[in-house]
Image 1 (cartoon, rainbow, N blue to C red):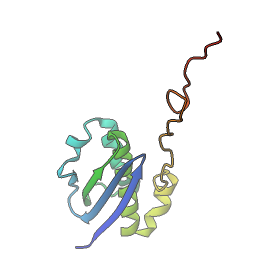
Image 2 (image 1 turned 45 degrees about the vertical axis):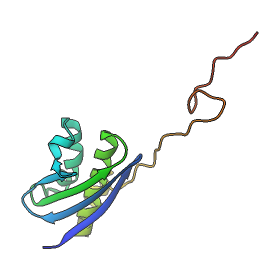
Image 3 (image 1 turned 180 degrees about the vertical axis):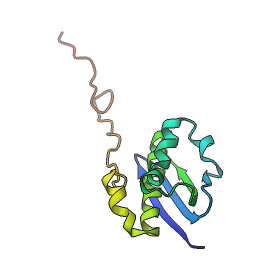
Length: 128
């Protein structure tokens, strides 16, 4: 039984995904995936690579994820799962790439600048 592992990132979230042949168990940080990602939207996101490649229920997924919020973590897990599937079977890459699942989202939070309230918001201008 071989274990394929991959790394997924999004914003400040980092997910280490371990994929092994199994019955479809999905654990995130030692918990059931449905407990860690409570909304249907997030659950669909992490399962999308399996739905696209028609491999749902064929693999056990164990992943450790830290940093960021729930949405960023879900996207990091999604990328990690897609990369691990490609390591398992390189022929799946065109299917995943067509659904934009192999691309790391480069958007990060813009830093706060000095003399401003936030990254782009400025203090109120005083004329007199």
